[in-house]
Length: 256
Image: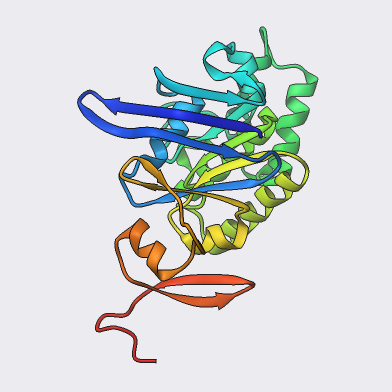
């Protein structure tokens, strides 16, 4: 397993957010974390990325305890894309992407660092924006730039918090296909997604959260019964590709 989380708990002051969360993320697979708003999904990623400290539980990445890793060792293992990001400085896009190499640079970026940043921008079609100020980009464009920064970092595990939330349909598809290809090349992707249908289409492994706890489907994860348990709303299951697409039950029930 790329990632092994055992009995992870966390609280913001007196408000408990996560309670004894345990799950694994298989190597080279796309693991999707699903659940209602406030169920603890983003908090898990922040703990894994080191944005928040955790004191209860154990997390190992490729057999290494995250709490014992240096900054550069953590950067070589984990790349993190937050849901929200702000910058007050008008850095050029190419410089923002290059910061993905920061943990591996002693003084100034070298030729390899610049080469990896260039390749990441090419991968996501960002070269036309290379000299644009990052602060002037749209929310979707910023999301793509931050994804390029992670690609330049070359981590073994990528953590993503709602990576398609600001993207149009074309960029959503392009990014999700890129992530799928990365898993096929051996990278492990762990992503929070709101849309269970996107999870079905692209995910390999699924973690469901409810009120800060992991819940198991017990049967088919996309069944209306389990979806109602996870999201608290009645849904319909539409057969698709060996599974089910999930749609909310229309007001007044289904009359088909």
